[in-house]
Image (cartoon, rainbow, N blue to C red; front, side):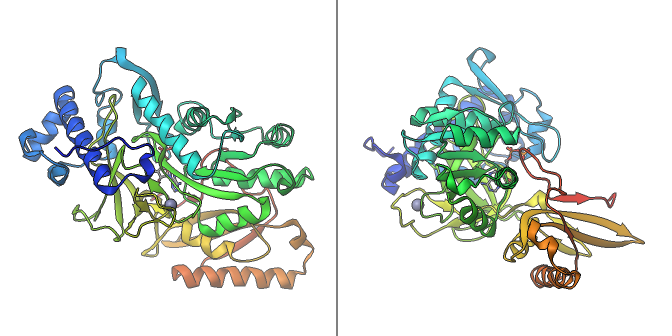
Length: 435
Ligand code: ADP
Ligand code: ZN
């Protein structure tokens, strides 16, 4: 095996060092799960691959994939690779798309998690003089404790406020001089709305950086947030199954999250043929954990659609980047035979003046015909406009969406606060079709 020198900052490792670390950790992980998790032994046997065939990272393509239902089938502890006595933390996925999935961490797993989140914060330009208002939910959801641990590790002052109680959030943000906030982008929009109602301008407070993730958000949404709140908004990516937030994070170039590949090895596959795709091509993101002990995963299919960006980032990090996740394959809905993603509608909506970044997509079926209604909140001043000008805006939005997705949608303009707000992930699509 190649020998490599220790490097001080893993984000900037020479690619051959990174590869050597990945290879060593990969082989260790395969043997660890093979020895300790009967499920993997059965799975590899059924797939016709023997452990002796896995000799280098290139052999990864011989391994079977893991999908979400595998984790449900082994609920709750069937994938654990260490005895319970070594497990110090349990989390569960938020269950946006079904029953929760249980994950576990050893002490060293928690340490890796804290370090990747600390590296994420460092790459956003957060430092130990900062105060982090952590408005991700605390609990089984990984967002809250993930940012909490990484924040402390990085040396910032963490305010563990969790989600909700929005007025108090704004009061503390002002009184504690929070300089960084972490939450879902949709919750931050809600926070901005609330601040406006309270007569407080977030741009006048000390906040300078937003750490946003856990749900897709478009660049149009980023522009809205940055200009209204006077902050830089950065993307943090992660999923419970792999570790939680901190699988990847943008740098100040804002050019797609770098993946912390020394711990999480990414592949892109064609979701239909399951064949690996070269860097640059769009497909489904798949991860193999390289350092986890309690619950390593080999080739886990995330259902997130993206591509690996082949070009080196201007920041000098050698870690590869992915294009920001614009959608997950389970978010897609089909209307009149057309595949639509909420992000396409969001992009079309948010380029127009007069609307707030709060919207919801309602799907109904009338005599066998599908209808989409897009409800979008208007800025309060718009309500004084004439009916004629509102009708014109409605038509402009509808045209713009039709131009993007190819089908006509009904647009309903509603007053601020009409669309239900969530403290965590936003619910963008309400499907009332009983399919
Ligand atoms: P659930 O699957 O129940 O939502 P998680 O909380 O683990 O559980 O969510 C992980 C998923 O959230 C990811 O697979 C991805 O679809 C989405 N996600 C997380 N971070 C981002 C991000 N920065 N941009 C887009 N989507 C994200
Ligand atoms: Zn970069």
